[in-house]
Amino acid sequence: MRLVLVGPPGAGKGTQAEFIAENFGIPKISTGDIFRHNVSTGTDLGRLAKKYMDAGDLVPDEVTNAMVRDRLAQPDAKEGFLLDGFPRNVAQADELNGILDELGAPLSVVLDLDVDFDEVVKRLSGRRTCKQCGHVWHMEFDPPKAPGICDKCGGELFQRDDDKPETVRHRLEVYHEQTEPLIGFYREAGKLVAIDAFGAVEDVTERAISALTPYAD
Ligand code: AMP
Image (cartoon, rainbow, N blue to C red; front, side, top):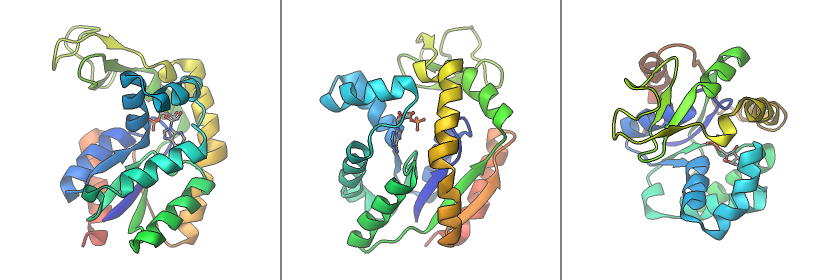
């Protein structure tokens, strides 16, 4: 299955992406994770991406597209993949169509995680990430036992710069202006399946898997 996940920041894309990818046995390719990895290892790409990420803006298309092109050419993506966080605008979606045409491997389906605006703000601003293992906790919905400390590894928790309230608002504007048009784009292409992403993580995963199962080979 070649799958794209769309939905606003805070819809739970990263969390659902992990469960969905595992269920269908495909690699999860998250452009946000790849950028963050480059930031933390101090590469040139990381230095370039960081200033856009901290501001809640999109990294320029030519940089992001080249990175995705390379990643999709890796052997583990041959039998399918889940893209989380890409495409983020119509130009990236056109580029993805071009890459997949060249590979002779069209997209199977696009899953839209539908959540309302207020819910998204609550979800994002309560997120705390572990400095050591990267696990994401939520102060209200999934708090660790001791505040500020990761249950899994004892690492210190922090708030991503891009989860701070001003940046959250800006990321939502960017989503509305640039990414939301993809929903119409993929609906017209007959690729879109939407699910309600409100509620407990396991319930949303179950909805996602049953919506996607018809598209699995
Ligand atoms: P995410 O973890 O998907 O919310 O991504 C975090 C940040 O990485 C975004 O706010 C952007 O700055 C950058 N980013 C991730 N994916 C893309 C993309 N497809 N195009 C441009 N920037 C991206």
